[in-house]
Amino acid sequence: MKKLIVGVMGGGEGASPEVCELAYKLGGLIAQQGWILLNGGWGGGVMDASARGAKEHNGLTVGILPDRHKDLASSYIDIPIATGMGDGRNIINVLSSDIVVALPGRSGTISEIALALKNGKKVILLNFPLADLFVEYQKAGIMVSVNKPEEVITMIKELYPFDQEE
Image (tube, rainbow, N blue to C red):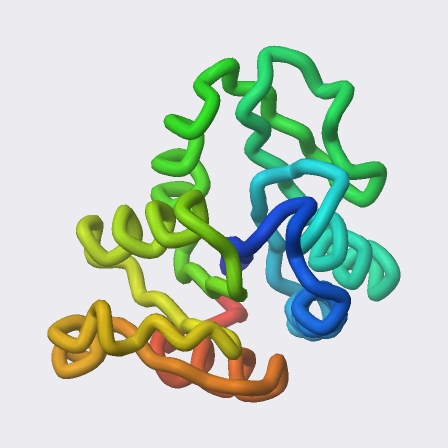
């Protein structure tokens, strides 16, 4: 049975406590669905919080690290993947995810959103007011905005229909 891989993107060390709380809750909800959480793997911000939420709910986590070494990986990452690619690892984050959820972040997160859209991946913005920048993708139905982690789970089920028994 193939498991859905949900890419969770967002701010690193500069992420606010409120955004980290959303990420934590989202990680837990992803784990409760039996899905795999994939993120940038670092031990800070959205990456650490979402991985912690998933791990504390018995989920599986994958971290795509920009470094050549696994030392900076969050302690909540089960499978750290060292790329040595710096920001270039964003394409791996996106292409390895079945669907991308973006929480507030800066240029790295925006680049992941753009790469996801460019590659036809569906994107859910969680409390991230960027929708006006990508209005054509909203009209095409491949990008939506929500405000609560629970809404992310509902949207994933609507946007990515799949039979979990396969």
